[in-house]
Each structure stands twice: as structure tokens, then as C-alpha cells.
Length: 371
Image (tube, helix red, strand yellow):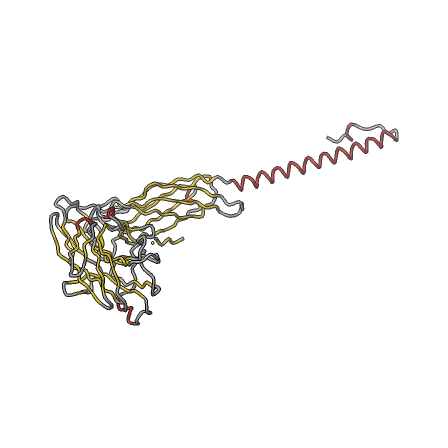
């Protein structure tokens, strides 16, 4: 997610995933988020027997080429040929289903490719996978292939940008999902490589804060500050992916009791948003005013050739001093009660004195009357 000072499966890139299987286990079931793991060289130590270890990474026709992702800037209507390499590092045979889909950033802040046909609404639909020898084309267009131990297959990838594609970033990914036969469900896992596709043209780059909700939570200790809980959405209002640094700042009347909280968001895709929740300490000064400043940040190796400007939205929250009012009420009530008890006691004593004087036949002077 996000790293907040007072921060989100794992990036889809050249990856390696270890999945420990029982010798008789089969792998099938609902697909999980695309999981990224260390570089393939991390498998220098052979995995335990029964482990399936595999990766999907950018390649040339001759095999993996060391790139982290597939990155292209294309004109509308342009086509580019690429390759990905699927490698089974295991000491056992394994079957995979390979497909392309639109890229998203999940609630955790990590890149993913959702499973199913619904994930091919944008750039995922621009990607066509070639059929290497031994692969089977399924009815839904996905590839299914079985790799022997310690073997690699190179899969052609064709990206065809529609002539009416809008300028900006269109994320996608190519995923390999480990599958298997049998009736026992153990685990379904996917790994993949990311496609950074940018369509040329005039672009905008902006992130803004929307749907701000600030709530006051008083402390029932009258000598301690309360808490303002702020929830808002950071929305990418431009055409390219951006990170963001958002700062919430509040202060009471005259700038008294100022506080701020900073949150960093690693990546927000175009026309997408990320939810931020943060808290600030605040004294109950009846009202606190401030705002949320959102500064766009360039992600990774991206190049953004337009000006990145900070945006702001105002925030106001009422901070009534409930605990302090209760304290004042208790103190005042106590003082009134003490005075009332004192006067009642004085009247009782005076009545006793008057009774004693009357019994003794001593007349009472007006000045002796207790008010």
C-alpha cells in the first residue's frame, strides 16, 4: 500500500516464485494475485523435491534477455513484436496456462493482472500470444503447455495498438498460471511480466484528492489532544501513471496547534485511484482548518514530459472541547454543591442556636439571623 509518516500480490516483473507442493498434490483453483519473487538466480540452491519453481520474463527469440519488463512507446495503429520466456526450474514436469490481461494496481499498491476475460478491456486486448510448439490453444484463447524439468519455452508476443487508442499509459501483463489435474485443491499461483505501453500524443499528468471525509474523535482526557481521522481518495486525473506524496495539514484558529501527516503512494494508474486513511493529533479548539496537498511523482524509469503541478483541496473539521466542557461542568457543579451544603449546614446550626436561646429566654437580635 502505502507508506505514511505519522505507507501496498508484489510487482509484476521478472520474477521467480517458489510453491511447495506435496508429491501427490494437484494445483488448480481460483487464481491468486500475480506474485513476484526474487530474480531467477536466487534458485542457485536446488529447491526441495516436489517444489515447482518457474518464471516469466522478457526475452528475444533466443531466450531471456535480462530486461525487467517490456516497455514500448507506440503510435496509434502501430504493431510491435516481442517475446517472453517461460522457464520451469523444477525437477518435475509442470503444466501452465499463459494469457495476457489489463494491468491494475490492487489495494495493496502492487501491480496485478486479474484473471478472466474481463481483464481484457484495454491494453490486454491488444496483446496476442503466439503458439509455440507443443502448446495448446484453449477455447478462451489462452495457451496451455507442459514443460519438463529445467526447461524453457519462448512465446511470441504481438502488441497491436488500435488506430483510435488514446494517448498515455496502457498497462498490461503476460501471466503464467500453474495448473494440474486431479481432484484435490491445494493452491493456484501465477507469475508474470509487465508491459509498459505508452501511446504517443498529447498527454496530461495530474493527481488530485477527492471524496475527503474528516472526523473528530475527542480524547476523554481533558488534558490530552484528540484525533482527527481523515479519509480521502487520491485520483489520477491524467493519462500516465504517477506516484503521489499527499500531505494533510490542520491548525486551529490563528494557526494554533498545527499538525500534518504525509503519505506516499507508489503508483496510481490513469483513471484509477487509491484510498488513503490517516490520523492527526489536534487540540479541541472548536474548529480546525487546513487542506490536503497532493504532489505528483514520476514512477521508476518513466519519462513525463509535461509539468507536474501540486494540487490542493481544503479541509475543515469541527473540534468541540467536549471533555473540557465536562470538566468545567463538574468543577462548577462541585463549587455550587459545596456552597449549598455550607449554607444548609449554617442554617441548621443557626436554628439550633436560636432554639437554645429561646429556651433560655434570651431574645434573638436581627443581626444574629443567618442569611
